[in-house]
Amino acid sequence: MQNMILDYSNSKSIFRSSEDKDSDSILANTKIMTNYPVGFDNQFYIIKDLAEKKITKLIQNNTDTYTINIEETIGWKIDSEVVKIGDYSCQKAIGNYGGRNWIAFFTSEIPVLDGPYIFQGLPGLIVKIYDTDKQYDFSLVQVKKGNSDVYDVRSKKNLNINWVKFEKLSKQYYSDPYAEMKSNSASNRKVVFRDENGKVMEPDFKGWSKSRQSEIKSCNNPIENNHRVNYK
Image 1 (tube, one colour):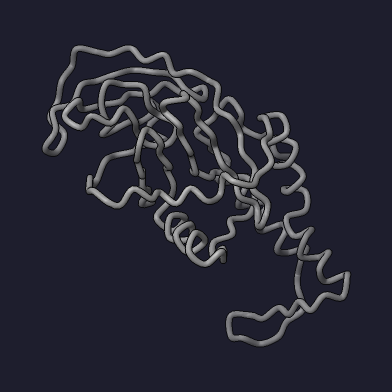
Image 2 (cartoon, helix red, strand yellow; image 1 turned 60 degrees about the vertical axis):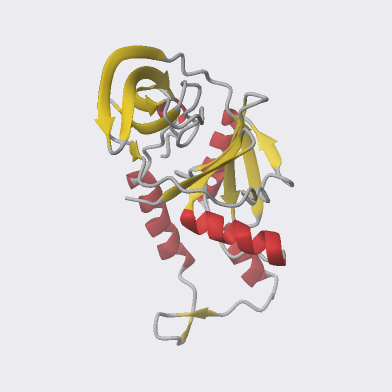
């Protein structure tokens, strides 16, 4: 379970983890980045411009930022079923995205035509949405007013890629997860490795790579199942 935040202001929104939002706030105010996700697997950073109908998935790999324009449409079908979720009267809708079938419940009591991750386009805020295989489940926990600054700082300088390039980069990273770190060591840059007790140690790139590759394969269950990378 992970706490995610959907910031919404003036028809624009950012969906990201609470850690990413804290990092973005620090970056906006100090120009220092404190959170450097690595790899390309299962990141959930989405930027939406609802007025322009533009949705962008952001992927951070260390200091490199990539974006993918989400062009797949959901094609919602609104059902007559109405249920109470928390304090809100919610209506059911069914859609398809990423090779998965989704069931959503939205409320028109909150006039924000948005929702978690890439999901939007219903006449109200999506309060709950899950795929029919029940591998992903997003549920609203809290609604509160904040300031108008959503800290949109990571979309300024990036490289836009498509899903084909995403797969290529993912496989490239998987084949050698510590390539950059090894490069720094080989170029005689001052890189010191310490164990959990603070003792200087020799890097075990081979062992670390096997462990990271195993982690990537075991967690290879992206929302975009139609763009799942086949790691070998």
